[in-house]
Length: 372
Ligand code: UD1
Ligand code: UDP
Image 1 (cartoon, rainbow, N blue to C red):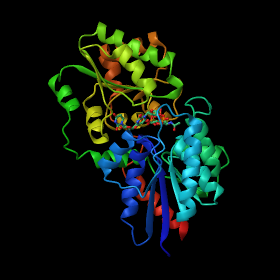
Image 2: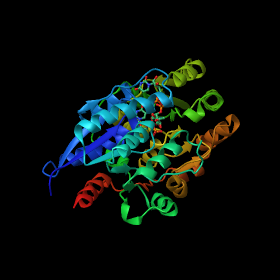
Image 3: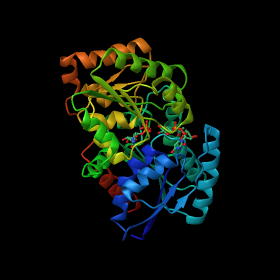
Image 4: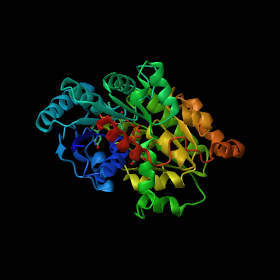
C-alpha cells in the first residue's frame, strides 16, 4: 500500500486528550502512515497542557483563540484556516473528534474539498439540539459528512443504525479516553493540589467542574450556591474546583466560591495530575462529558449537572446520576451521597463501559483496512 497522509485536527482540551492516543498509535506505523497534526488552538493554555503531557508537536497551529469567542468566530476562523492547510497538504483522510466547533468546522472544510472524514467518538446523542449546546448540533452535523464512524460503544452504534447509517462504515472501538488513562496512570508527577488532598485524608473531597455553555447564567449560579451551602452544613467536606479558563466561569466561580477555607479554586490541571485527583476524590460533581467516562473507570461516583446525558452507559451501570441544576436538588443529591453509605457504596463500584484501552489500535487498523 502506498503511504497515506492522515490529517488529525483538534483544538480543545478534551479533544486533545482523546486524540493523543490515536496520534501515538499512528506514529508506530510510519511505514504506512504520514501524520499531519493540525491544532486550531480553540483553547490555548488548556490545549498546550495536553500537548506537553503527551509530548505532541503540531505541524500546524492556527492559534485562533480569542477572549470570549463566539461560536461564529470559531467556526469562521477554523473553516478558513483548515482549508488553507488542506489545499497545501492534500491529506488522504482527516480525523476529527467528538462534538466541538473545531471538529464541526474542520469536517466541513474537508467535505468541501472531498476529503474523507473519520469521526472519533461518533454517534453520541441526546436528540435535543440545545442540550448540550452546541455539541448536539455539531455531532449530528459531523455525522452527516462522516465516512468512517469510530463509535465508543454498542449503544452509540445503535444510534447511527437508527439514523440509517451503513453498518459497514461503523466500527465499535471503545473510547480513547481509556487509552489516555492507561497512558497517564504511570505518572508520578507531584502537584500542590495532590499535596492538599493528601494533607486532609479524612475529608470527603468533592471534585467539582462546570463549564457548559447551556449552564452559563442561572444554572451555574445555582450549582455554585448549592455547593457553598453543602460545605457550610458539612465540616467533613472540602471542594476542589479547577476553574475552566472561560471568563464567564471564572467570574461566577470567584464571586460565589472565592472566599471559603474548604473550597479550593485552582488553575486547570495537567491531565495526568487530574486523573490522580479524580482517584483521590470522594465524589465528582460535573457537567463535563469526559469526566462521566473517566470517573466510573476510576471507581468514583458522578453526579451529572445536566438535564440529559449522551452517555447512558454509565447510568445503566449505576455509577452516574443525572441531577440537573436546580439548587435544592443539587444540595439534596450531594447531601445524600455524603451521608447515605449504602447509596454511596452502590454508586462507587468500578464500572468501565468504555473499553479496554485499545481503542486507538482498532482505529488505526480500521484506517489501514479502509485504504486496502
Ligand atoms: C469548548 C467546547 C465544548 C467543550 C469544552 C471543553 C465548543 C463550542 N465548545 O467549550 O464542547 O466541552 O471546550 O473544555 O466547541 N479560554 C482560555 N484559555 C483556554 C481555553 C479557554 O482563555 O485554554 C477562554 C477564552 O476566553 C475562550 C473561552 O475560554 O474564549 C471559551 O472557550 P470556548 O472553546 O469557546 O468554549 P468552551 O466552553 O471552552
Ligand atoms: N481535565 C484536565 N484538567 C482539569 C479538568 C479536566 O485535564 O483541570 C480533563 C479531564 O480529565 C477530561 C477532560 O479534561 O479528560 C474533560 O474536559 P472538559 O470537561 O473541559 O470538556 P468535556 O469533556 O465536557 O468536553
